[in-house]
Image 1: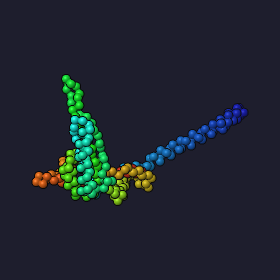
Image 2: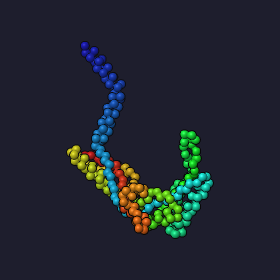
Image 3: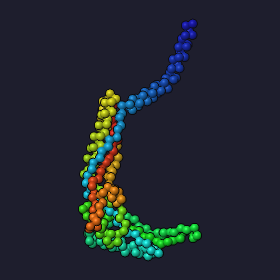
Image 4: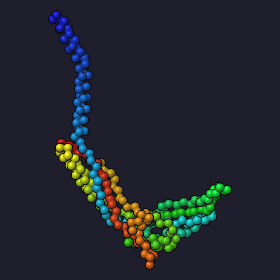
Amino acid sequence: MKRWVKQVGSVMIAGALLTGGTTWVGLSGTTEVHAAEAAQQNLLTVMGKGEISVKPDIVYLSIGAESYAETAKSAQKSNAQKIDKITKLLKETWKIDDKDIKTEQFYVQPNYTYSDDNGRKVKNYSAYHSLEVTLRDLSKVGDLLDAASDVGANSIGNARFSIENRDAFEAQVIDKAMANANLKAQAMAKASNRSLGIVLNIVEGSVSVNNIYGLESLQSKAEVAFDAESANTSVKPGEVKLSTQLYVQYELK
């Protein structure tokens, strides 16, 4: 009886020796998983938003001309004459540098008519050419648009107000976003009966500028006005908004 007990004991010990390595690996892996889960439970990630309003110091104007003719060549030639006059005005009268005048869009295309009897036929051709003009004296926007119209511009697009040097303001936007993130994180930690630890990670979104106004939207905001007596255009740039987002990860205690 005693010898039988000893043999069983030997088998049990041998089995433990054979499987012991696997058993310890399993325990170690389980411990790592539990540690990772615990670490996840001690993290808090919030999104902070920052925004400031500043006065713009630069505007990008879309000034163009469109012409129609029976042939593509005639339409292009007529429109080229208009653009030449506009460009001459910008450079010689308004002293705008070449680097601040660039082609924005250009095309020549047929226009069609449709009927049940004849199907689709070419009606005429249209030529279109628009320039992006950079202007830094914002008080002259309306005068420039009027002058361009006088020499043949018949397509005025967006007036995009902006900040030429954003670096001076980006730090302010980031400070506001970080303060907003801290406020949210502290409130969440308090609500969960925890305390806030150190910042572990920060990911920043790009700083955006809300500054694009089409003439139609400007009119609806009463930012473009027309003087009935003098027939002058008045453009008020107002303010532009710079905004960013920060994703901030904190330690929870």
